[in-house]
Length: 275
Image 1 (cartoon, rainbow, N blue to C red):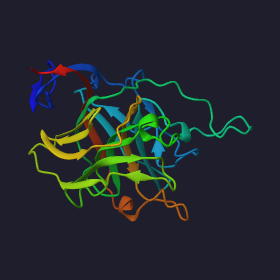
Image 2: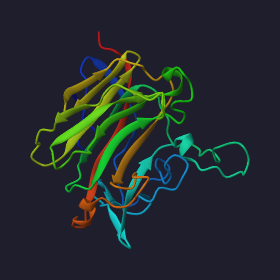
Image 3: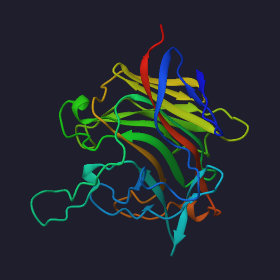
């Protein structure tokens, strides 16, 4: 891996043997979220989701984003940031036959490149964080390359009870045609200060996943050939239980404040192979 230096900020770790150009990033400078780059996911497959909120977002003035768990009237929620939206999330609002509401204008869509986050994970169980890429129209075509692939660069469902992270891909939607690479689950090594870098090199040949400068997984295909968007998500557990939705018992034991912390998100394009 090679260092990419950005003045007054922590460096990126980029795959060697390639020439990279920074094309999009957020260092979370200042004290307010840049809403020209990020929106909030509030819906889950066509309905409002109680575990998602637009509250609990703090920039600490030291170039760090904090996504906090919020408790209200015995219920728990946390923020879910995205640079565009999944069409199927948007509730129907016309009263007609079309099952989706008005499409939201994307803030950032991109194809191929290296996508990297530097973050500190959740400290307590009962909720989890993820850094991932999604297509607005996943599952809308029988050929996943034409409608996109969910690329989970980092998921912390098992953390911190187990020092394990997941990464891998999903395609063909989320119904009977659902397919996946099988998510790699691996041990996360301690870094001393708690900061970790998670990234993926998405190119025409496949996906290579990295953690703290080391390769942890490869997925050869299918490869999305459409522009996709970035998500920094957090989710309080228990609310996907359709029969009895509500907070996971672990949430009720949580000591607040509790937050997921992000130093930066960066996107690089490969310019040309190094000769």
